[in-house]
Length: 178
Image (cartoon, rainbow, N blue to C red; front, side, top):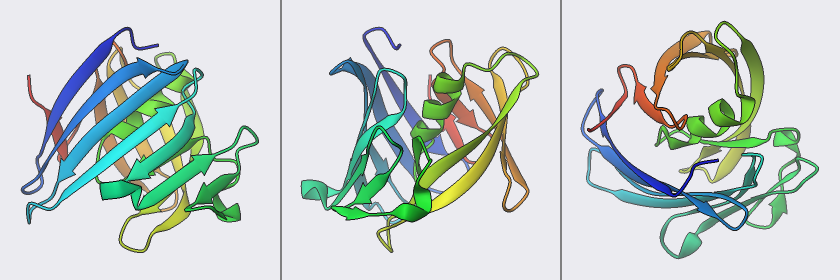
């Protein structure tokens, strides 16, 4: 568990934009609270609450929580109150506009160096307000280094995390400021 609170400011490496985020202990689990800014200076606020085991509990996106996502203990999901059976079985949310959500499965899995795991995440398309399944394979390559393979497309990402397991770098896309 993250002791206390940690703040991260990521800057996009592939174009204009940034993401400021806070990770904190809250309600028997932890909270990820952030604000992402795109190239046109549009700001998107997000808040993710996770259970003590690191799995997603609920997500709020946008001003006045225009998108509300819930995950039940049986790994079923609802988007704005409507069931989304396509992502049943996913334990983590994936928000493509921030590297913060990759922290959830990395911390939850606790992989040893050389170990890998397949992970199903519920990926949010903000524009369409739609959740879809996304299949990832996480492989721990070093004490702070991971490879993330999107198995559907074959694309890989190199990630670096800090001592708390928080993503600090998504090579070519995001870099945390020190």
